Structures are given as C-alpha cells and as structure tokens.
Image 1: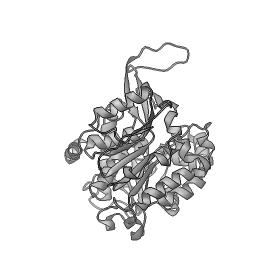
Image 2 (image 1 turned 90 degrees about the vertical axis):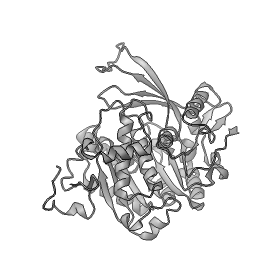
Image 3 (image 1 turned 120 degrees about the horizontal axis):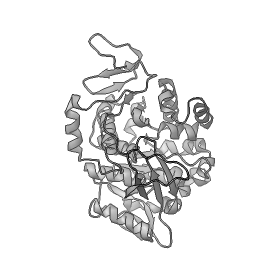
Image 4 (image 1 turned 30 degrees about the vertical axis):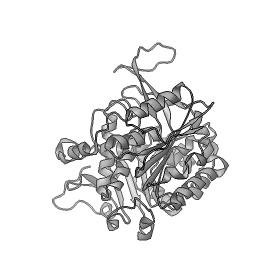
Length: 410
C-alpha cells in the first residue's frame, strides 16, 4: 500500500471516490426497457465527495488535500490521472491499495429526468480510520468527510471507526464537516441503526450537510416512506418549514454547530447553534463575526440556469459553503455562494468542469438582477426576499409578514 504525501493546505476532503461513467443522452432520450437507445460519446470523470467537493474547491482556488483510496487497477490509475490533470500533486494524499478493485459508478442522467446511479463500492469498503495518517492532518483548518454511508469500513460496528476518526481529527482543533449519500434500501448500509451512529458521531461534527431525503431515510425512515406513499418519489415540494426546523433542531441537539439540509433544486436550508461556545468550539474554521451566526435559520433558493446535468450538484454546493467559511463570510453570503457554485455545476454535464475561480463566482453574484433565483418551497409562504443580500430568509424574520416597501416573492 502506497501513501502519497501532499503539501500543507488548509482544507482536506476525505472519504468516497470512484470513477463516474456518464453516457451522453440525446435531448429527446427516453429509457424504455428492452429497446436500443442511441447515445452520444460518454464522459469519464472522477466522482464521490473526494472528487466532486475536492475538485470544486481546487477549481475555486482553495487548494485542498484529497484523501481517498483506489486500487492498483486500470480504473484506479485513471482516477489518479484525472486528479493530476487538475493540479500538480493533487493526488498526493491518495492511497493505492495493492490487489484491490477501484470503485466506479455508471451515472444515468437523461435530459429532463432525475439521475440514477449504478455503483460498485470497491476500495471504499476497505477505507478506514488508519487511512488518514496524522501527517495528513498537519496544517488543516477544516476536514470534510463524505459518504460514510457508502463506506462499510466506517459504519460497521455501530460506526466505531467513523467515531474514532472524527474524534481524532477534532482533537487536533480542526473543524469537522460531514456529508452523506443515500444508500440502496436493500444494502447493508440501510440496515444499520443510523440514529445510534449519529448519536455517537455527531458530537464530533461541527458542520453537517446531508440532503433532506438522505436524512429522512436514515433518521426517520417511517416518515420517509409515509411521505413517498402520499406524494411520490419527489419529497422536496412537500417539505415545509416545520419539518426542516424539527430535523435541524434534532441535529443541533445531537451536537452539531451548523446543520444544513440540501433541498435539490429548491436550494439549501441552514440552522446554527444558539450558544456562542459551540460556535467557538468549531476550531480552525470557526465562523468570523460569530454574532452573525448565532441562532440563525436561513434558506437560499437555487439560481436559475440552463441545466445540462445534476451530477455532483450537492457536493459543489458544499464546496461553495466551505470555501465561504474559510473566507470568513457571514452566513447570508456563505449560503448564496453555496447555491451559486451549485448553479455553475449544473451548467455542465459532469460534476466539476463548470466550476470557475472564486473571483468569477463573486463577479457573477455582483451582476445582480441578471442572475435570477428560482422560487423556493411553495409551502414556506412566510419567507421574504431581501434585496440587500439576495436571500430568502427565516428565523426571526420568518415570523413576520412583509414590511412596507418589501416585495413578497411568493
């Protein structure tokens, strides 16, 4: 097993990585069982958190350390080659496991239809706490781990390995961020007691950024299936402020400082701890201007763009948010940059090629009215649009009706 050692960045992205194979569908494509469908040239790219969030941060200019695991096979070599194309030494933190097979995913994403994934776990199954050596943590302010729900070496035995890893990182004074992926309902991961795992892991997590569907499936499965029976597969239009507040409140009680819920094309919701000491305790990437972050509840809708593909949209949104923390931005600005980076992502079919430098994201936001936001969740009719920061917002403001001179957006 070989370890490559990188330089000293401020942020590391660790966890799941694979090779994504994206067949290119014609504009009017419809998948019909038993029928031949003519495709266009496929796109090969790296996938998973290490790639999607990590390379988005690289393209934004934050120079992350990437910590993942591949096999010494053709797919593994392809992943390392692709990572190397984004920056010299970017693959330096990767582990190459002798005799193991690398993870891959076939991403089926026809135009106008939600994507689905055919996935092989590969080396992600053997990734464990020992694959993050102490020297890989040197110099870090922020450590982001993604998709432990697809990494059996971390979630088995009640999440003992995941807890030990995050406890060790946190003990170094590093801010810990965590993201999830929804597992196959028939998989070993889906059979785990995720409430128990969260209870032991989240006290060591500062920033928790799952999607609404992932969190419902793992934490409140009966609610997840009850909602699906009632409204169908797409739960997002039927979520409301009460559900978001209830879920985020439970996450804060479990120990996180910042709870975010990704809402697909409805944007991203954020709620923060009310106690100053919890935010101070975030460590290296604790927010600047703490008073602006205390007890906040915010929602930023997505920006309106021409969607070419949604692969990696949530991961890139996270990259925008984490980059904003490193930049010391207030929560309103952080959320808007999160959805802005996510919007750039979906303008291309693959996960990261649409991500521009941070300065270009800033310029696009400064252009103002030329970049419109989509309507947010229709059930949240008390949320108002504030022109000064281009954000739908809630919390204390959610409880009031629009003031004189304000335009109600919904």
